[in-house]
Image (cartoon, rainbow, N blue to C red; front, side, top):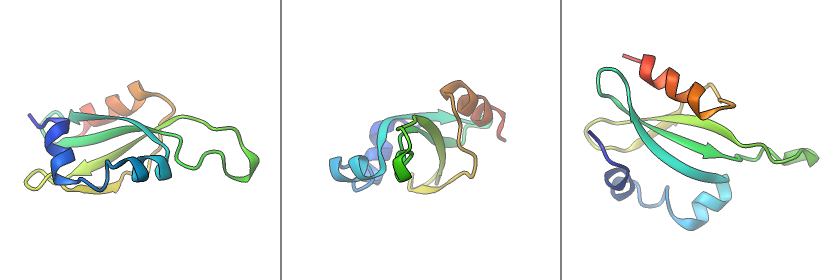
Length: 93
């Protein structure tokens, strides 16, 4: 199983303080699909306060390359709850 520390070592710029602040990321988790493929789940405010809106926490999923652990583009769906995102990851092949 892939650990968050391994993903951080493979993507140091992604997790630096400036990048986290810019993108509004709050927390990160590594979850695995039912076949063991790793995904990065992140809670983020992700520019939700643009155009005078209130900040709104949401959850996004990025696939990870299973060999290099490089972070791939995020999946299109944005989740309101962590459980909703976890359920999707668990259902993926």
